[in-house]
Every structure is written in C-alpha cells, then in structure tokens.
Image: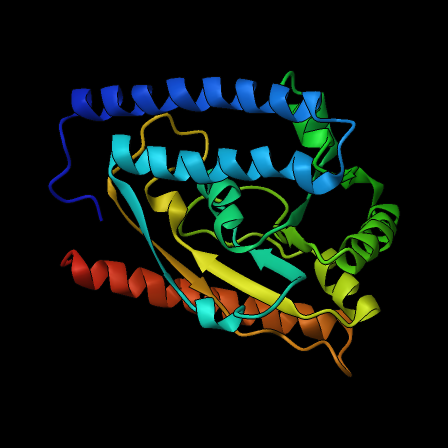
Length: 254
C-alpha cells in the first residue's frame, strides 16, 4: 500500500505544509460564511464547498494524495438524495463536496461549538444531532432531513457514526435508512479507502490513490428501514473488500 514512500522527514514536512494551509483556510472561510449570514443558504454554502474542494486539491499537491472515482454515472441527473458513506478519515468530509451539491450534513452537535469552524458550519444548515438522544435523534433527522430533501439538497450521513480505522467495520445506524423509508428518497452508498492514506487522528498523510466507489441508487419503495440499511451495508462492505483486494494486488501483497 505504501511502497516507495518518501522518508519520514519528507512526509512530515509535506504534511505540515498541508496542515498549515488547511488550518488557515478553515478559519478564513468559516469567517466568510459567518459574514454572509444575512444571505440565502446557497450563497453561504458556496465558500464551504470551495473549502472542501480546495483542500482536496491541496493535499494532492503537498502530500501526493490523489483519488480515483467510479460510479459517477449513478448520480448523473440526480438533484438530491441520501448519501450513506463509509467514514475513515477527514478526507471524505472534503471530497464529497465534489460530487454532491448542495448538501446538508448530519453531524454531532458538539462540532458547532468549535471556534471558527463550528460557527461557519452552523450557517450551512447542517442537521446537528445529539447522538445520545436515541429515538429523538432519529426523529430530528427525519424531520430536518425531509426539509433539506424538499429543498433539493443531498443529505450526507456517515451511518457508522464516527471514523472507523481502515480495515475495521463499525455498527451501521438506522437513521439514514429511516429517512429514506419515510420520504421515499433514494439512497446513494459510497465506499472508499481514504483511511489507508489519511488515518483518523493521524498527522502524516501518505501519498497514493484513494479508491472511491459511488453505488447505484437504493430504491426504498416497499422496503423497511432495516431492509434499506441491510442492502446499503452489504453494497458498501462488498465494495470495501474489492478495494482492499485491488490495493493488495497492485502492491504485490499476499
């Protein structure tokens, strides 16, 4: 996976260069979003999307971390839906802005308290939930998610709830599937292996190519929330196995 890596010092300096610009851009663009608070959502959303796209480009230039995506034809012509995505790193929180716009993110409400970042985030109309609230959190997700979908936004959810280390599997939560069952909106599953190169809580970014797979829509018609969740989970985890096998083959691992 990480054959022919630069030296540790080079990796550190490249990663440092990324983090400096990432931090400064986060502060600057968050303040821009705050200053745009009187304007409609789409004007406030534009700087947030630019922040994500810019830092995907920047991590490629500094750290050599690129991506390859398959399945864009599955979302061609679609204006909204529910995205259920594997969550391994920070990278996908940036990169999903490339393909799903405008979007509303389902996130833990504690993030809104983070200086600068949280202030700007709050003005992008996320669905900020208390993960300890149980059924009430699901009800909030359905209520606010329905509103976002009616406004032709993509609702982006990490069904495992938190970042899971590469090679591991978290427990899939029912909220996104319940929203699909309630609204009849399609589900778009997304698999990727960003955690292999940008580990959670990791400072160092390793060069390589992140494999991204955007799946065919899961039609909720006639299905329960559990059936929708099971179908989505099977597709994501099957694709994760394919991505892992592909990476091992390309790098000559047994």
